[in-house]
Image 1 (cartoon, rainbow, N blue to C red):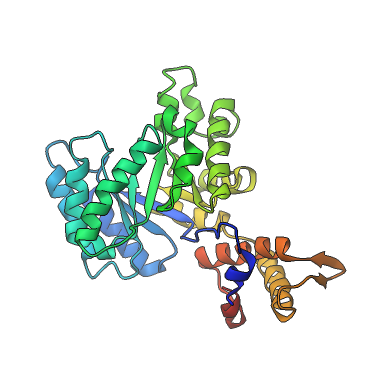
Image 2: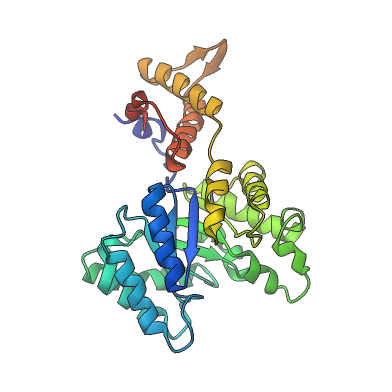
Length: 323
């Protein structure tokens, strides 16, 4: 049996996807992002944006362009998704239809923004599935943006939906929804990590994801020029709030996010040593350097290897049987 089958019997096996989600809306930036992914490899996802990327009146042409880029030969790794308009927007189903008609089989995921509750997510998924299945795609992965009061109130129910694989925190819309009760500086550091209402939202999203084996994706850093700020935000997001993925809105943000969300080399070496011994013991308890380990700790170290793989860290050939 594969280690994941042994270690996660009766439990949610965590989803493993790249740790960086790079958003691009304008055609020039979308093409530039795809070229960078070709250069670096599938270390980060690209989300082509119909919600904020399309100018008013140009929604059909923009969604058609998104579909053509996803279906095109430059999408070498199949790790390009798209954000559509929200369910209540007139262009929602139009976006879905155009993208699924043109690229359903190559689409990594679709992002649903601004749902008010779990029922809206399910209604959106129903529409998406109708178009995806018609184009030969079953169970298309769904990412959901948690950015409204209602979605946060039902975040556990949303995370429990089987087709949902990732929840992202939309910090700007969330703060704006408080109509000035949360100061604007809570959209960025350091207040985004200290304001109680914002940290509560981040923690509830992360906790819901981990309870259901889904990926929590941290909000964007608006600072573009100072990559040290991006690296600091990414480090705090993972170390203090449990996020295993983060948005990028500029190519210079990608590498700092990858580095911050990758485990340390020493952690990876320790995980490999412990899991190799555990596999030899048929996943029974072992002692490693005088400390007891069993399946509870094996799951932790297996997750370390998954994070290393998702962030593109080099792993020895011997890790193959563990992954």
